Image (tube, rainbow, N blue to C red):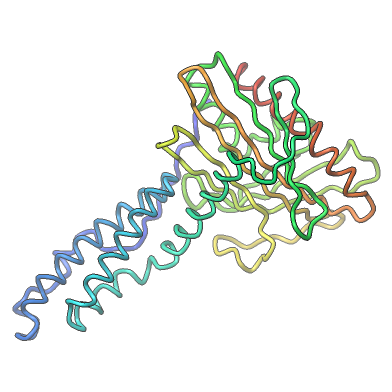
Length: 320
């Protein structure tokens, strides 16, 4: 099974050929002739960086994207002191269309750093159990009776291609119901696929193991991040709670009789050695039960589900 080919990329707006659009010094006021050279070189460099930013965002290289954002900010700040009002206006005109992208890159890179810390630290994590090569921890959250659960395992005697196969289990969203354990996930619809590793997804959940429970659904914002310095890939999904905050698509209302739950999941896949893959996950699911004790939900979350998920993943990449 191949990784999905990227959709046609929607480029971040920025001029790709500045020399075709910038007037020469003869068209500018004589008092601005010295700044015209600075304006031209700044615009050329800005547009090259915008192209690089677009590529990094498209490929999920969040930390490379952040480096480019810092370069853009450095150019902006250093030129304000040297340029005339004309030069400042030029830079503002170029950067204005990508301000939302810059803010999103800074927010997401900070979020990924926090996730990596949670995945690898021992801060406030309590050992729940260890069995069959899978280690489960949980952590209590402030103002919530529902615990966050972390599971980790090491898959040995695998091939490098299995790393790609493992990533594809999560990237190929529509196929997740075919392998997700317990038949819990009935359907996964992609509502928006706005870059190679960024989607808005609607998941349809059935809780057949729990009698007299209504079906659930969840709308999540999913992102994949390529971390080449760690030889790893990180996938993050989090429920969109404020429907009006989604700028990529319209969020549908839950169907009649369906309860909208909230969920947050992080999957970390790392090729440690040529034949060794490290797999870690963090999950927190609020199924919106009104009468089921949270202690029972936490017990289920720390037991059957993470073991079953890890075992299923190991089996699937063995028998891809």
